[in-house]
Amino acid sequence: MRFLLLIIPGDYYAAAAADQPAEADCIDRMTRFSQEMQDAGILRGGEGLHPPSTGARVTFAGGKPVVTDGPFTESKECVGGFWMIEVASRQEAIEWARRCPASETDVIEVRRVQEDEDLDADIARAAAASAR
Image (cartoon, rainbow, N blue to C red; front, side, top):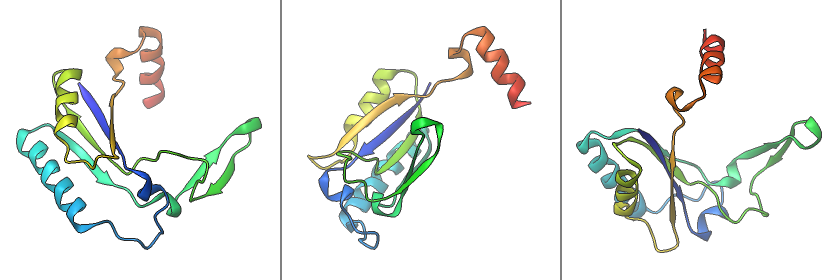
């Protein structure tokens, strides 16, 4: 099973300026954690993200796309980065998330990736047909 571990950093990240570099200690801790997952053979991918001040959101109220540039003052949480892992169970994914050297204000959200075998047979056939 594949799981996405989303890191939701504390308050500083949401308000970080576009040119504000990440703290070296934080990068070092997260790099070592990523290496542990790589060494265990479970890491499928992962990246850190630039602060929301450099991003944009596209909303679809009324069926029309509207672009809002960051930062997003109405947002209390934002994704700071992610790891894609492949493990045997939800519990194992949670155990890896618990090992993350996150700060006390950080949150790791664990989300299972929806695989083709999780889909209803009719939906799976439609998805396969559109992929071709």
